Length: 220
Ligand code: NI
Ligand code: MN
Image (cartoon, rainbow, N blue to C red):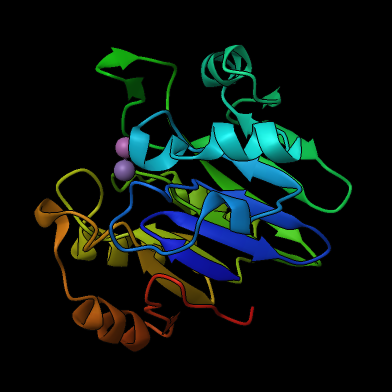
């Protein structure tokens, strides 16, 4: 798995799943859209730091953008390939399976609401990964933890727009993954944060924590 930066990840297994590809406008990433050839693009919500370069990458590669119906019709209108699904739904792509869950946040483009945000569990090669999107802590994360034996949770810790580190630790208690990668911090002045305290607290809970710099990778 590659951490591209912010909330953007590339899961590499039987196929390549790109999540929330915020690249060209991310000051902390050097990965360019042309570098990527995903089989599937997941977008948690319409905010610019998540939709990012998804439309361009889909146009170039033909990879479908799997997201909520409202955002799916928007990206289709912009020439991307879209697949709509919604919370509770499971999409079997053959090389992987994706289930959509809630996220407590909003979804908008230029201040206009566009559907609701979601989070994803991606199961590929027998491994399940939870990408929380931009969310506050919510109790139903416990249901996700019950349903899946999560190898890895990708959780925002930057605060201000999402969970901060304390709530992300409580999320770990509900999700019970084996490992965690913190995300959605440092990219902007409003979310500057040193993840080392979060990581040591997570390790104390028995969850292996990997704080990966943008551009870094993790063997999953
Ligand atoms: Ni957002
Ligand atoms: Mn965001």
